[in-house]
Length: 471
Image (cartoon, rainbow, N blue to C red; front, side, top):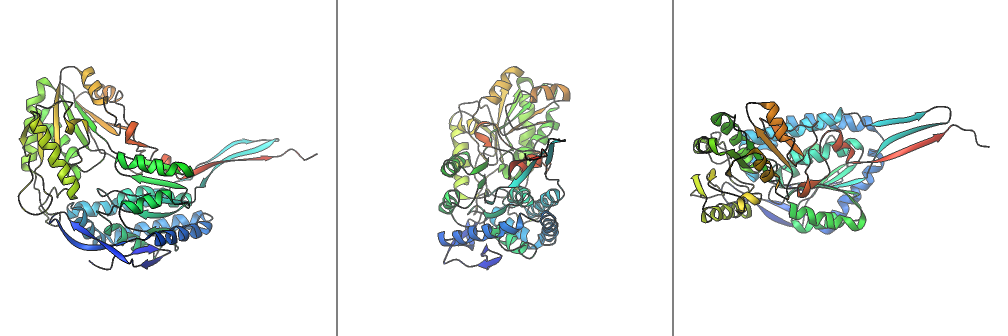
């Protein structure tokens, strides 16, 4: 792996400075990424602005380019996925799936109609409502799913006629830089630019005068800063932020079956998913059985380097998050919780943490009240379903939640009372390009995916043409 560069105006550009990218399986720097300067950021936004002039005019060209980009991504999976695994930590098969999912988002939006509404067409007037592109978009993406979350932004933005400057997380910049470089062969220069750098670069992007929209995925704390930075220029924003997603198990559930499913949806990507299950509420009568079944799953899972085909869970992505998970688990244990399994970092190099099931725990403990974003799951007991709903909703977060039980109609009634952007019944983390995704409360502003996600990259324009002759 070498020669990673910025992509500005369709050209690969070196930077005067670089920064190290760490392999989380070893804890050591394995490659360097370019540190985009303020002047280079200006060039990237200027290129996107120039490209917008022609890109917005030809919808057929945009759709054809997006189909070509999807095909090229799928053909390049073996070039991209190993880079993603090495910098992010996820098993190679999951990295490959992420590349294919990115292509799927492009394919979906390439075929999506752009809404056009005819309100009136009579002898007096023709009144239409059309969607116009915003202009240049700044996309800022996180380290847990660097590619697919980028294409949640890229696909609808490009279809609508916008151009983009994309910044990946400094923890996982390389797969994104490589992907954007590859796509230059099928996209006009300046349509999709990629820059990399630290938090300072992100701040320059959100306050830059060129972009008309900021699409950000990341932490709630950083999302608030993005919103404040965008406000003086009245930039449009979409913020997909953190979650503390509850799963409520009903008293008619099969403990073993439910525990198997909940484990998969809590520990997907090693728990590093904004909408993964973060806390589980179980009726007292089923509590011990569900906890034991979850512990059995945790003990059986194989944790290791993502490049090893035997690994099912990789490391935590970065040192700050590794330390945070260790701190939250230690805080829970010191507060009286018990680690039924796990509860500690694994010996050896890298950011590996044993899959952890925490029992005898309640609200007021930080790992219950906050988003852990790692392989540690608190399991809480409840007496009545009304109590469980109230406790599940008693948070500043509102991204998603799920309800589990044999009677799916009853489970759906409970799910309808959860205050969050997405609810699932007897499943979790089922997402797709046609399904809207967004959060309530501190979990975000705006919607990604589906026609709602496309709308977020447009401005509505009413066109009123009078048919009454001028006097």
